[in-house]
Image 1: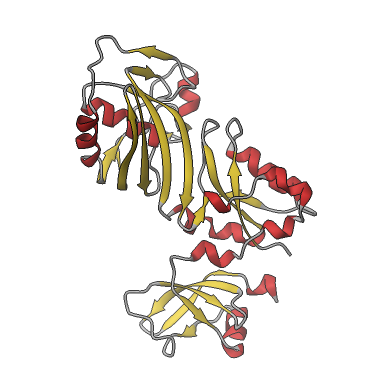
Image 2 (image 1 turned 135 degrees about the vertical axis):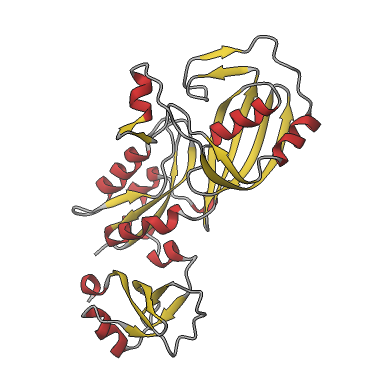
Amino acid sequence: MTFGVINVFKPGGSTSRDIVNQVQRACPGKLKAGHAGTLDPLATGVLVVAVGPATKLIQYVQHLRKTYVGRFRLGLRSDTEDITGEVVAVPDDPLISESELQTALHSFVGMIQQTPPQFSAVKVDGQRAYKAARRGETLDIKARPVEVYSIRLLEFNYPDFEIEIVCGKGTYVRTLGRDIAKSLKSDTVMTTLTRTAIGDFRIEDAHRLSDVPQCSFESMVDDPLSMVGSLPTVRLDSVELERLRHGKRLSSAKWQLPDSITETAATNHDGQLLAVLGRKSESEFGSKINFVPQLY
């Protein structure tokens, strides 16, 4: 049974679903697969694809910090906020200096309010915003909080600039660029975007699917434990494993976990991921995601 995760390099021009389909075609037999965070066709870089039972762990990858490198051009406006849309020049756009841009970047670090673009997968009253936008409709998309951990200016050559962003779930980089430009009474479009990391999944370790014919599929699949690297880990003995197999709660007395810990990954003595456990009481944990019936 294939059970794990693949760090895939997504090239420009393909959708995230295209990559998942390629993974499924490359693997032996029928295999469930899903990705942990959409990249637009324009974007390149890290796409984490879970395979087999590991698709149940996608939510944990989605909550990891993401790192992007985005390139923007000032003085332009687009209905999609990037170069794939209808791009027009902004009349009388101000000449912005590098120091002005640096100052503006600092104000977008932290918990900020961001209104997703009309061309996005956000749902409003049950419909995807981008579908309405393609029909020429404008939806009332509410601002929502997103967290930006850092923004670093990598290059400035007016009207172009390049920034590295480390952010949390749900952040639209093209919208962040738009808001930064608007704070300087300008506008901008994103010209390129690369996701360089999701947690410890880094672009330098990503597999290009063109490599698949030259190597076995299984060699690309990493340990699913890497998907829950943000959780503490406990190792179960044979008695605990048997209780877990039958869906019974486990005593946490010997694990010495702080009371603040509400979730933990559980492995066997070989380090194989068995389950994600959730706190049920002061001294007991129960299974939230249990792989034991499929593994044994």
